[in-house]
Length: 208
Image (tube, rainbow, N blue to C red; front, side):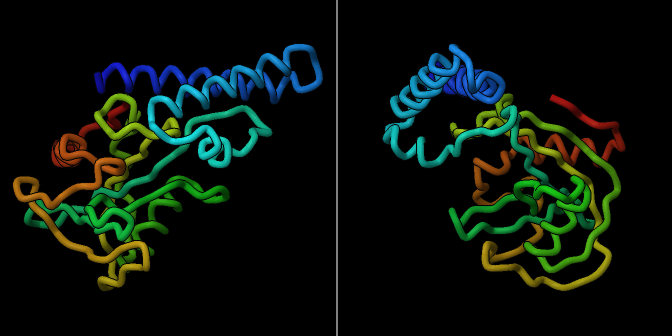
């Protein structure tokens, strides 16, 4: 049943995006009313799948003024000489993930991920290379309203000390066979193994 719900949610996101694209480019013509109806139906379907009210989704999604696209999440894989991975503990769900977050407008992907590393760990880092572009739809993340691509960079620490910000309650090094409770919306164990394997093999960019 979960697989069916995930497929339905993905289809609903596509319908919503098509409706919003139609509203952006056809706001003054006869079709606008139909696109608005499509958008309303998509929010009603999300409500059924999530048990949240239509009003909550309506308030969550601001009207689109441009063509709707996927959101971008940037993450940094940093390892030490013991092949341990640097993880941060989110205060929001009290679980662990790679340093990173939503990409800010006005910064390049590399600037975004280095900013996130600094803010969440206190370390100054540098990028070695882009490891992977992951489509969250291809992995068993919990259902969510956005369609998301994850840009995962291999980085290394230059200097600094542990100094997490208010969003992060702890920072630590972990072996892949002794991982803490991961934040499933942000990173999955199979993704960590894939990224470390790509880093160790010095392979090219993985794209889902």
